[in-house]
Structures are given as C-alpha cells and as structure tokens.
Length: 248
Ligand code: BV8
Image: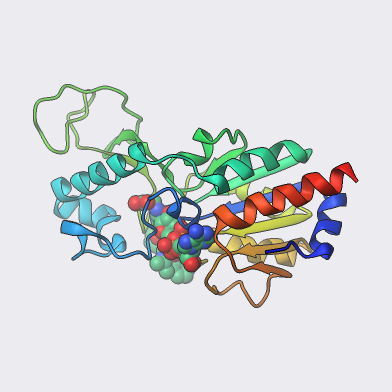
C-alpha cells in the first residue's frame, strides 16, 4: 500500500494532530473487537447487554467474571505495530492527542504518553456506590469483591452504556478534535456516541480527516482520505513515508 502524496503534503505542514482509536487497533494483538462475536460462554451475550449498570445490578457476578475474562486477554496481549507506530508518531508533531475508546491500556504499553482514555481502563477498579478508585481489597471470596471503605460492590473503572463519559477527558477530546490540522480515525466502527461524533466535529472545524479501517463506516464517505487497511499494516507504512519525507 502507498500513502497518498497529498496526505503527506498536508502532514508535512501540520502542527496539531488528533487520533481517535477503537477496538480495531487492538485486534492484531488478539484482543477481540466489540463487533467480533463473543467467544465461549460469553457467546450468548452482546457486549451492550453486559456493559451496563442495569446488567451489573441484575447479575454482578456475571459482569465481574466477564471483565475478569477480558482482563486475562488484555494481560496476555502485546502492543502491535499499529500501537508502536502511533507512539513514534507522537514525537513528530508539536501537538498530538491520542483519544482512545479502548480500555486495554495497550497504547500506553507501546509508549504513547498523550493518551485520553474516553471509556476508562479495565485494569483499574472502583466502588460501584462511591465511584472511588480502589487499589486493594480483602479477598473474602466474594464475587465481585467488596469495597474496603463502604462494603459496596467493586466494578471495573470503565464507562458502561447509559453512563456519562468522564468530563475532563471528554473536554480534552473535543478540544483536540476541533483544534487539529489532521484527524485520524483508526479501527473504529464510528457507532458508539459521543466518541463517534468527534471525527465529524473535526470535519466541521476544517481539519483533514483520515480513516484507517478495512471496512466502511458512517465516516468513510466524508473522510478526505481512506486507507482501507489493517492499522498494523497502514501505520508503519505511514510512519516510514513520513520519516522519508522529513529527510528529503
Ligand atoms: C452516554 C467501555 C449519556 C466498556 C464502551 C446517540 C445516538 C445513539 C445512541 C446514543 C447516542 N448517545 C448515547 C447513546 C447511547 C450509547 C450508544 O452510543 N449506543 C450505540 C450502541 C448506538 N452511548 C452511551 O451509552 C454512552 N453514554 O451516552 O451517556 C447517557 C446517559 C443515560 C442514558 C443515555 C445516555 C457510553 C458509551 C461508552 C460505552 N462503553 N466501552 C467496555 O469496554 O466494556 S463502548 C465500547 O464499544 C468501546 O469502548 C467502543 O467505544 C465501542 C466499540 O466500538 P469500536 O471500538 O469502534 O469497535 P467495534 O468492534 O465496533 O469496531 C471495530 C472496527 O475496527 C470495525 O469497524 C472493524 O472494521 C475495524 N477493524 C477490525 N480490525 C481492524 C480494524 N481496523 C483497523 N485495523 C484492524 N486490524
């Protein structure tokens, strides 16, 4: 695959870059996307059924064990060439914001430092009632375990459907999206809101929008550039072309 010369020209003068990533960026690390069918005992549930406060109230053990299963997948996963290329890209631009919907922490493990976690992080735990982050608790065998402060149930520090996103992160993401020269939308189906609105806000603010996704999404027809490739293939090629254009 080749990078469109016009895109390289725009990146040559760009100062401010914003990137939105979704589950597709972690697919090549073996972390199933939301669209991928749930496997094994989870096959009979849709993620939207398990990732809600209602589902947790209805069956806290089931939801806790689903996240425990996903935590093992994430723990065994390694950042892939897509994650690593984005960590390099951060160093090439004066302003670079990496907005992720992923809760797997793989961007940070790849070395990215400008990460905005819109939907939280699966390796953090908080109290369902108080919302406070909890780092240690007594293993009494309860599933989910109990909050050491109030005895309430513990839950993963992720944003569930029908829950508002963390305000600071949402504001930083909106500011980065409406103040960038080039906006990359990578490995996301662009369906879940309010994250899915960000590429369109960048378009309205006059940014050049680039989509990297092997499948079409609601953004595809509106993006100025489409790289219909896997992120782990397209991003290293893009970085190579960027470095070459900077040397010449
Ligand atoms: C909220 C954390 C206020 C938990 C997640 C407006 C319109 C319609 C609906 C709504 C709306 N506003 C709000 C809603 C409701 C809802 C929503 O958007 N529903 C959707 C289903 C229509 N939004 C919410 O509930 C949000 N909260 O609005 O609060 C409120 C309060 C009360 C009542 C109502 C509203 C909260 C949303 C956040 C939920 N939490 N994750 C967890 O992880 O368990 S969302 C979760 O799903 C992910 O974080 C991500 O955001 C989303 C999955 O999307 P993607 O990441 O894009 O992944 P997906 O599998 O879909 O696609 C993968 C893509 O990658 C594909 O396109 C594929 O082609 C591509 N791909 C595959 N391989 C590769 C690749 N690309 C590149 N390389 C590859 N190798």
